[in-house]
Structures are given as structure tokens and as C-alpha cells.
Length: 181
Ligand code: ADP
Image (cartoon, rainbow, N blue to C red; front, top):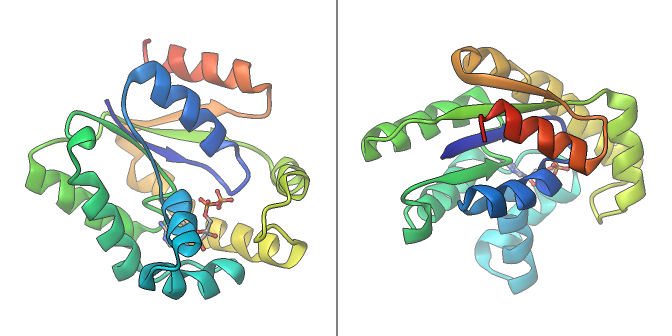
């Protein structure tokens, strides 16, 4: 299965992705995780991404898209993947559409985790990641509203909306059911 996971920062996409990846047998590809691994390893890409991430801004699309394209070309992603954190803008979605068309494959679905802003702010403050202070959280929510939320319209023909304010298990069960699994 080829899926994109959508939702505001703090929606719990990453948590759900780990469980879904196991159950569906496809790799979890998280741009946030890929950036953090690069930052941890001190790679040039990590150095470039860090200042944007620390400010809660999007890393430039050319950098991000190149990283995703390379990851999708790896063997384990040939028959399916869960993309978490990409695309985040309509421009990135168009790039992804191009990558998939070139590979002769299609997205099976776009899972949209729906959570209110109050809940996501509480969740982010609770997890306390380095980029989770109130200022960057506010910026990231604004970026989500302006740049990422329009993807729901872009993918209108394959969107699967999951109410995502329940427990981890409830949200996973709702997602599996919606995917017909
Ligand atoms: P969250 O789900 O809380 O937004 P992520 O781990 O998905 O956290 O992303 C952390 C940061 O990495 C983002 O705030 C952004 O700076 C950067 N990032 C992740 N994905 C992308 C992307 N597709 N395009 C640009 N920047 C990205």
C-alpha cells in the first residue's frame, strides 16, 4: 500500500505510522525523522535543515524533495510506503505526483488525522521535543493552516479522514477499518 499521512503537527501521525507500518508491512518514511537523523550525524543536509526546523519553518522544498526521492528509490519502498510529513505543500504534492507517475504507481490513499488545535498544542508541549516550544508551535500551526491544509482539497478524490482525538489503539483501529484491513 502506498499512503500519505496528513494532519497538523502533534496529530500523532508518527505514532500511528509506526503501528501501521508494522501491520501493513511497508516502511515508515518520516521527513522529520530523516532530518533529525541527518542533524544527529552532522551531514550537510542536516546542517542546512536545522535552522529552519528550529524556527518551526519548512525546510526548502528542493532539499526536502531530493531527500524523499532518494528514500523512495530504496528497495524496501518499491511495493509500498507510508509517507509521514511529506508532502506538506501543494508544490511538494505535485513533485510527489511526478515521482510516482515516473515510477508508474499510484497513491492508494491519503489518511487525514483530524485533531483540534487545542489538543495538538497540549500534545506537543507534553512531548517536549527540541522544536516544541510555544513560539515554534505557533509558527508550525500557521504553516499547517496556510500551506498543508490545502492538500486535503488537492487529494479530495482519495482522502480518508480519521477523527484522531481518542487513544492510540482507537485511532489505529479506525484507520485499519477505513483502509479495509
Ligand atoms: P511535526 O509532525 O510535529 O510537524 P515533523 O517531525 O514532521 O514534526 O517535522 C519537524 C520539522 O521538520 C518541521 O517543522 C519542518 O521544519 C521540517 N519538515 C518536515 N517535513 C518537511 C517537509 N515536507 N517540507 C519542509 N520541511 C519539513
